[in-house]
Length: 485
Length: 106
Image 1 (cartoon, rainbow over the protein chains, first blue to last red):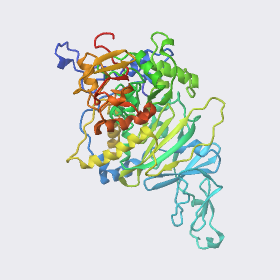
Image 2: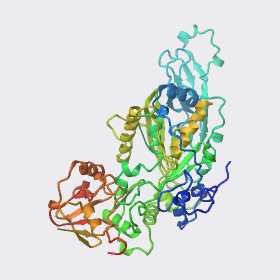
Image 3: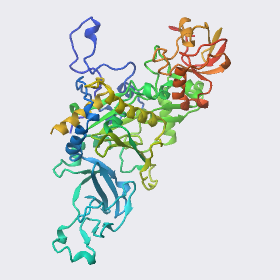
Image 4: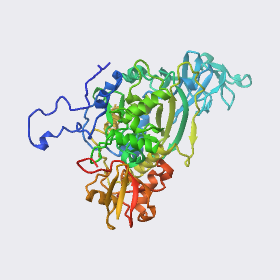
C-alpha cells in the first residue's frame, strides 16, 4: 500500500532545476509542473476551518511525457478487437450494485461486448455470477439488464431446462429427459464467472486467473472509506447510446479545462470558475488503477485580467439569486452587507450545504472543499465514482468503436436512520432524449470528436497538455500495458 | 453617448464605432473577459437596465454565444448582451460586476 503523501506534491517537483538563473526561460518549471494562475486546490485546503481528511491531501502527480496520442485507440476496429480480447476479457468491471439485487433470488443481467452474465443473490450474504447462456442450445436465460427480477430458478424459455439460483441443474423437463442420457446432472451446472464485491459495488472478471478485486483496486478503497457506497441509495440511473468511442465519452470527464468553451454558463456568472485550477492526481507514478481530479470551488476567476474580489462575487450571486457551478445550480439569497469581513463565496456555499444537511461523511465533518467542489475519481477502465452523488460508467457498444453506452447514476447519501428506497432501474434514453443541460453539451462534443478525429490528416495524432490531460494519458498508458501484455 | 454601469456607479463615454468593452478599456476601466473580447468566453455578458432599444442589433456570432448561455441566465437571457459585441446608438444603463477603474478604486 502506498504511503500517504501529505505534502503538496502537485506543486513544484523535488527535482526542479536548482541552478539560480535570471533568465525567464530557465525559471520555467519543468514540463508538466506549470500550473494555472490563482490558488490551487491544496492552497484552498489551507484555508479550511475544519480538519482536512487525509484523502484530500493525498495529492500525487507524475509527469508522463508529452508524446502525441494515436487516434487509432479510438477509431480503429483492430484496436477495439484487441481491447475485447486483452482488456474486457481480463479486467475487473462493475456489473451492478448490491442494492440492485437486495433479496435472495433477485438477479440482473450485465452485458459487456458479446458476453452476458446473470448476477444473482444466492443467499442474504452471497452474490454469484453466471454465464447467461443455456447449456442446451445456448439461448440467453435472462434478459433483464435494466432492472432486477426475482425468481426461484433460471428456466430457459426455449426448451424449459432450468437451473437453481446457485447454478446447479434443477430440472431437465421429464418429457425430454430420456434424450439426455449422456448428461451428468451433477456436472451440468451453469458456469460461473468470478464475482467480488467492494463496498456495495459488484464486480465481475472473466479471467479466472485475475488478481483479487481489492488488490486490483488498491488505495482507492481507503479513500472511499470516507464516502462509503454501501449505505448510499442509487436514486437515478440513466443510460444512452452515444456516437463515440467509450474512451472519448469517458475522457470528456477526465479534465475540466473544457468548461470555459463547452459550459460557458458556469463561468459567465464568474461564480463557477473556468476549470483551470483543477487538481489532477495519478498515483504510484501512474501505475495505480485509479486517478482523481478536484475542481476548485467557486472563487474569483484567476484568468480575468484583474483581480475580482470575493465581495463582488457574493454580490453577484445574491443578485442572480443562485450559484451556477459544476455542483449544479444552488439557490442563494441574502445581502452582502450582513456578512462578516473576509467571507468567501465557497464558505457561504458550504455553510448553505451544511444547513441543508450534508450526509455520508465518515469521521471528520465535511470540509468546504467536499461541499462545494466536484471531486471525481476514475477506476480503470471505465467507472467514475464521486464522493458527491454522481457516478459514471462507460461501456463499448458491441464491437463498434464508434459507439458506446454512457450511464449516469446518482448515488445519494441518506440521513442516518432513514430507510433506503429501492434502487432505481436503468432508464434508457432514446436518440432524442437528453441527460440534462451540462451533460447535453458534453454529449454534443463527444460525437463531434469521434467524427473529427477520423477527418484529421493522417496520421492524425493528438496533442495533449502535460498536466491537465494527465488522466487521459494515464488511462491510455494503462490500456497499452494491458493490450501489450 | 454614455454607458452607466451598476453596481459600481461607473459612467464612461462611448463612440458609435466601438463596442461597449472597447469603450470601457479606452476610458481605463476593467471589464470581465477571459477570451479578450472576441465573443468566445461569454464572460463579458451584461444585463441591460435601461435603453435596450439603443443597443445595436444582435449579429449572428453574438446570437450563437447568447444562445449557448441563455438557459442559465435570469429570464432566459432576455435583455442580456455581450459587451464585446454590442454597440449603442444612444445612452444605456446596465449591470455588470467587476467594472472599475484600472489600478484603483472607482
